[in-house]
Each structure stands twice: as C-alpha cells, then as structure tokens.
Image (cartoon, rainbow, N blue to C red; front, side, top):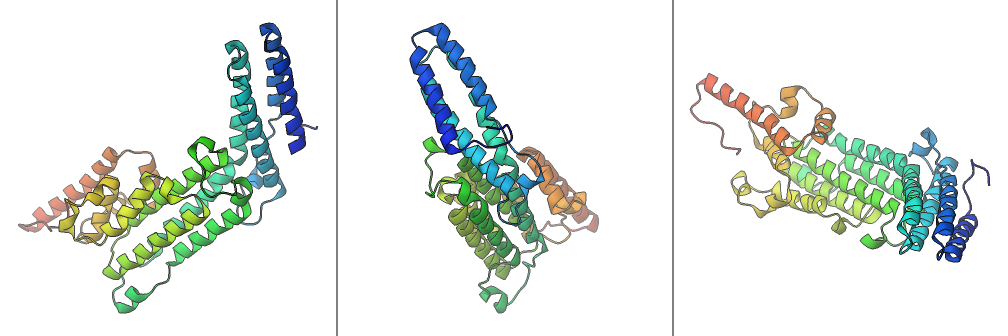
Length: 342
C-alpha cells in the first residue's frame, strides 16, 4: 500500500488480525511481547495519512474525493484504535505503554482528518445566526404577530444544517440517531460539540437583539422552535445536550415574562447571567447603551470577546454601561432611574 492511499477495510482487518495473532503468540514471553508491540506501533504510525488543505474544508457542495478519503481514514483509524485498545488490556505495562503512545497518535490523526470540516460547518452555522442582527424584531401589529414563517436567517440555517447532514454527516455518523456515551465515536463527539455550540451561540445573540416588540418575541420564539427541530433531527438529539438545551428551553418563556417577574423566575437557573443581563437591554431606555454600542463593536467582535472571557468580565462591561447611564440621569437632573433593570 502506498503512503498516499487510504487502506481498504479488508486491509485494515488484516492488519488488526496480524497484530492480534502476534500478541497472542508471544504474550507469555515479556521480551517477545515488547518486540511485537514495537512492531505493532510502527504499523499504527504507518496508517496515519490525513489529507489537509482547502479541499478538506469545503462545505458548499457535495463531499469531494479528498473529503471522502478523509472520512474513510477517520473510520478506519478509529476501528484500529478501538480493537487494538481492547487487546492490550491486562498485558504487561511496559508493552502496553509502547503501543498506547501509537494508539494515542492514531486517535488524534483520526480526529484531525475531519476536524477542519466540522469547524468549517460550525463557522457557516454561526454566520447564519449572526444574521439575526439584520432582522427587524421591533415590528408592531397583528400581521407581524400572525406571520408563522421562520425568519430568513433561520431558514438559511435550516438549509445549511440539512445540507451538512445529507452530504457529510450521513457518511460519518452511525445510522442510529442516538448514540450512548459508552459507544461515542470521534464524529458523534464532534457533532455533539457542534450542536451544543449552535444552541449556545444562538441564545447569546438572541439575547442581544434590541429592541424586541411583542410580535418580535413571537417571531423569536418560532425561530427557537425551528432551531430545536433542525438541530434535533439533523445533528444530535437535543435532549442529550444538557445545559445548552436547558438554556434554549428556558430562554423561550423568559422573553415573555414581565420584567418584575424575572428575578423570582426559576427559569433563570438554566441561563447564564450574561444572557439575562443582555436580554434586559431590549427592555431598557434607548439612552442606555449596550456593551456593543459603548465599545463600538460589531456583534461578531463582541461575541469573539465573550468567547475569551468569563461571566465576571462580561458583567464588568455591563456595569460600565449602567454607570454611564446613571451619570446621564444625574446630569439631566432626573430624580428617578427607569425601573427596568437589576
């Protein structure tokens, strides 16, 4: 087999069988066992063969030959890792350590062969969500409230998710929708991470939408329902996503609560403090600048900053806007602050 080609499934099976036979033949002799494991480790390193480059990251069309090759590589290497890992259980530590290093590298290469594709898919989905800031959620009137269509950005997000499922994920994931934790593969781990990030990213930016009318709240709630359906049907069972899913389910009713009801609502337990605080700006006076406005940041720039910060730093940025607002009120000679927040 040439270095530039991906071994066939039959070739992989022969390699695994060969390793297993040699281990079984010498496992009573520590010296020979170590020699076999060194040889087996070399075979494992030989299987590393990922295909980097822009071809591996394209997401607009069907899976290309380079991507199909990487898909095969990922699946084959994972099979090698799983089966050989089960063989070394109970063997001498020194021998197991020799092969464990190679197996760790094999697992890493298997993940690397598809990680760039998953990142490209996630980047695309995040770019769709960022379009929420181009929508008008302040529209008033019965027509807006009765419109049952998803927002344009959500329709684009749904199309992208379906495309990824059809062209890429269907080739990488098990046919069964739900995968137990004990049998989680590299690709199910990556798609679970992507699904969690999509929900978290959406909630973050939905909370930043300002202003938000009553009909706008209905529209946003519909978008959240559409998002939950798209992610659950095409990426990962949302009920298994934990905190991101609970946050999505909590945020939907939160936007309909009166401000006076928020503090005592148990729904807040499932939402990061920054989500609640950012959402409150949608209820605030126009002269209270949001952290984005105060720092002259785009939603993307602010989001990137949030990725690198904890809740404490985000709160400091929010508090700075409140301090500025308080100074404005005092400068105007007003005796009362608007009762909307905190």
